Amino acid sequence: MLDGDLSDPKITLRPPGYWEERGIHIVPSVRVTGIDAVSRTVELADGSAVGYDALVLATGGTARQLPGASPDLLSLRTRRDVERLRARIDSGPVVIVGGGLIGLEIAAAVSSSEQRVDSAGQITVLEAAASLLSRVVPDSVAEAVAALHRDRGVRVVTDSRITAAETDAVTLADGTRLTGTVISAIGMQPDTALAEAAGLSVGPAGIVVDETLRTSTPRIYAAGDVAARPHPLTGEPMRAEQWLTATEHGKLVAMTIAADLGLATGPSTPVPRVPLAWSMQYSSNIQMVGWPTMADRFDVDLDTSTGTGTCADGFATTVRCFADERLVGAVCMGRGGAGRALRTEIEKTLEPVGAAG
Image 1 (cartoon, rainbow, N blue to C red):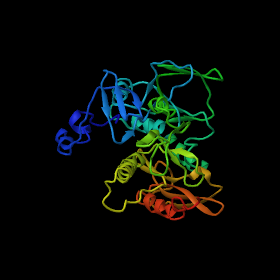
Image 2: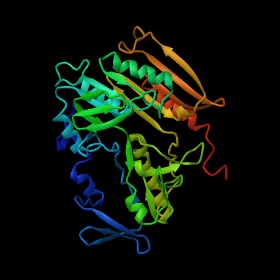
Image 3: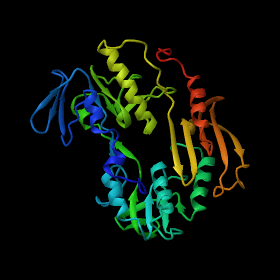
Image 4: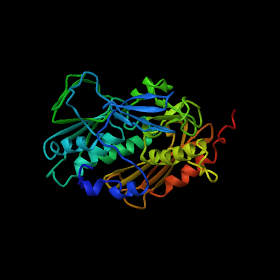
């Protein structure tokens, strides 16, 4: 997005006629102020109301804010955020707070940008944890990803505690002050305000739903980043912030609504419960399958025949992640087709929905 074409024709999901032909009425620039689950109506800011037979909350989330940071700190969540970033990152130092997927993709995009003459030594990634991507990959993979960035001149600083963050400077606990365009990439906060006001069950992970995305209130559903579906291994509500998950939630919630309203004409199509996410950083494809950080043992399959074996030159590897001899996750680098196969393999080990009860 930082280097791509963001014109309306390029980023529009479908041409306007697509929705009209399917009887879909899109109402832009309107704010929902409340939900009446008894009368099954949605209240709007202009005083009007819309009735429903089924209501889907796909409210997503907002960029998480650094405590005490400037409210004008840049982040990456919306198209407007991208436009603000583009105006600031063409030159000069860039400081990215957060070594997760978004922070690292921003670092790779800025470092590779054709608009910058030289980025070597000008891009810094600050991560509070001891390693990058600590929530999604094992340490061995994190080290390889860190090397991937360092090989291209990105400075990676872990165990960094920030005491102050402004739009053009960050101060660390040891007194170090880094200047440049500051970008916050410390994750998202699910937007659950409407759900809470309507009395739905809400937890730290988001709006609590069952396996088929039903909320605690009949005829109300949740999908996408805001939905907290039961973890297949622990049963705890789990949010999955991946593009592929949101796409599959759309299919799943449609099938659930069709069944609840008596509109289903055949068997539903199974939707995977194992998350799959991917990231392109420089020319490296990184895929994360399942729950790698739940593992206590790792099997590494490294193929250096694609290069010298260094991150800068490129290599292929698959890290299979096991917990008590059970495959619970995997991380693939440079093996674009491996992720889906591993996802299917993990999916086959899960209990059928409702089997445990």
